[in-house]
Length: 149
Image 1 (cartoon, one colour):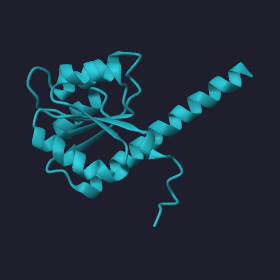
Image 2 (image 1 turned 135 degrees about the horizontal axis):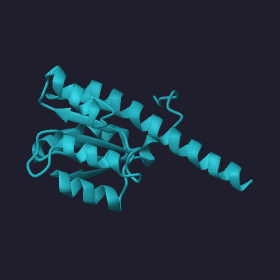
Image 3 (image 1 turned 90 degrees about the vertical axis):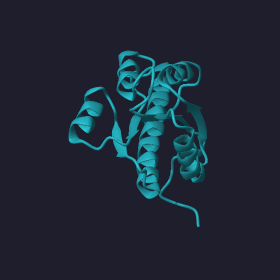
């Protein structure tokens, strides 16, 4: 039965999955498959930042503990750029201390999910962030059209 409450087509969305563990990426892909959106992958921070420049996503699921560049560092760089500061970032991590969640918020994370990831929680949070991101895009387009008048 179709979900009538979903007026925003999430199938047009693009999500970037960032984790240095390929099994974690595969699990996230399997969980997110039912949303039907485009899923891209990056396996470290520099690869994620390069991908974001070429194919700006509507949402990023970002691991914190990675070699070369932590998720905290990646998020901070995303927030420092006018081109990427608006992209919602959900931190996905095995860290579960309150200080880690606080640090994630300090560097600009939109949300925080701990591993092992619960599929229902992940889908709920991803759908909410995607709907919000896509509505913001629609609003920006409408404002541009209104200005052109």
